[in-house]
Amino acid sequence: MEALNGITDVFPKPPMKVLVCGASGFIGRSICRHLASSGHLVVRGVRRPSLPGDICIDYSADTDSHQWRGRLEGIGVVVNAVGIIAKERRARFDDIHHRAPAALFAACVEAGVRRVIQISALGAELGDTPYFKSKHAADRMLMSLPIEWQILRPSLVYGADGVSASMFRMLASLPVIPVPELGQAHFQPIHIDDLVVGVERAMCLAAPIRQQIDMVGGSPVSYPAMLDGYRRSMGFDRPLYLTIPAPVMACAAKLSALIPGAALTPDNWRMLQAGNAADKTAVTRLLGHPPKPIDQFIGPACAELLRLRALSAWRTPLLRFALALVWIVTACVSAFIYPPADSLALLARVGLSGWPAETALYGASVLDLVMGVACITYPRRALWAVQAALVLGYSTIISIAIPEFLSHPFGPMVKNLPILAILFILCAEPESWTT
Image (cartoon, rainbow, N blue to C red; front, top):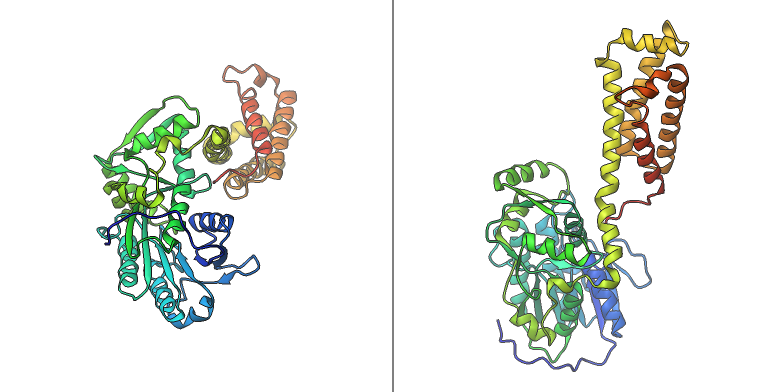
């Protein structure tokens, strides 16, 4: 790797025509916005074109250089920001991280593209997971070509709209935070603002070519310290941390891997245990200033919004699943556990007997079960309104026909009030924040 000598602030006069592959992803979108605001002509490479000038690309299929040649006409710089963290049926690591980028890089040489910026991953050259191996294979291929290249290897990337950052903020907002047992592993997230500036400076023709630069943040932190930094920035008090033993995490990763697209897999668990930190000297030289430390990621202006997003990310699902459990357990108890004779005696108090009573008993059980399943599979305002109407209807009938339940020591009627409160909150909530 060439030495990182001084990089001047003299950029080629815009506009430079830049193809950003993966422009619909978090990192790609951020790169496009920054380059466009700096006056460059940005061409978005996306799977589903939606804007004028977009180029349709599909890394799961575009694995031959001839598929790329017509897309590179007039392009001066190519930025490859395509990546996945978990493989799927149509998105394999080798295709997405290696074969398609390799085809693109070869086509760049043939088309006369001046420079390629490859967004790789910190630790790719040492990692033994399919994610790291496929990233490093593309890096090696690019380094072998007669073209100017820059390989940027980011650590975890923080941004308000980043999926991983949203997950970490959500975890940081919990009153009791589960923390995996990671030993001495440290992490060094880089803010997206520093990463996109680094991309633009790597495009600079005055910058030394053929560099591999570890894109890391201001200082390494442990996993709990990272979450604590996000938590303090969002205005939360210190929480209770609950350590999850490594064997338990390993078992959870194996089970999670059975879910298509799940973020927690055995490979990702191994990567988490290894940590993700490096020396910041190279990125400091590239940027011209030290990268942001983690305590500067969330500014006061956005702290309240991100706090509300973090809370909503887990609070609304918690209410939904708690409500689902109430409906489903009630259905099972009514149909299979509570003595049918006692249930029919209660129904006789409201004027039902014989087959109408049995129909009402088991029909209500089925309805309760449907309501519970719908809480998970079909969360809508209309559903919450229907459930509120059912609870109010049940409560009214019981209050009139069996008034002693109003003063029952276990408070079966009073407990409907928090259920109605939950339904009211769910009706008022928009879709849960995920970013």
